[in-house]
Length: 310
Image 1 (cartoon, one colour):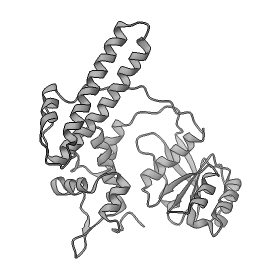
Image 2 (tube, rainbow, N blue to C red):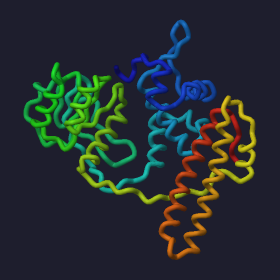
Image 3 (tube, rainbow, N blue to C red):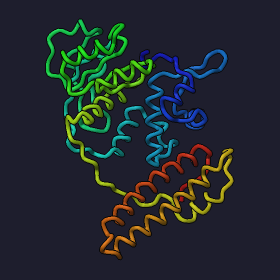
């Protein structure tokens, strides 16, 4: 399926993006975030470009950004904005050399991994293992399971032995459990189709890191200032939302509790020299959790049209 084929239902898009169907409809209706095709019966049909855009919008919303401010941006602008939120990870390769066995990917996979200074270079590509000729050094082998014939596990084992990659990524639809276990026994990363180029490139980088190709260091936890005033949290704690559930109330209560624990731990870190390191970590980690809860609360407020700023 190409990125322009409108074949995905709203339910499929929800599963691929993690964005609930009600939220997708709201973002379409209020902000024209995406514009799917409509069948004669009124059913929405999406393509992979819509999936990429909705996933990026969701990630930005989780960072506390307002979808109403993002909806008018182009896909490129959204990806650039998301990259600003992504921590810089030290020690990743600047170039990934890939061998690709796939019917369409060899010509399309080359490019940058979003958010990091890492480029994918396809050094060999073919639509079948037998079509691969002389091979250069390869960091990642990318294979479509459908290209491996009737005995894919054996064929993949042979191909890995021939290419000798540092890591292997296999794109696949649903496969029987015994076959899946056999594939995982080859220490490969399975990626469910359909998959966007962005997510496939990220999977290649993740596979390299997991294989020990490069040691990625964890970025230092940097905690931002609270996004909600005490008065706003109190109001959200007691508001009666239009949602059938009481998510705004529960999330507001969690934000309040996490903020209180964050402050408490910070005070402990400054007053107890014996436990300073532990309580310092507790303060930083609870602050990071508070940030995440705030982002979720903002997303719920955006979904239900509840004013949260101030």
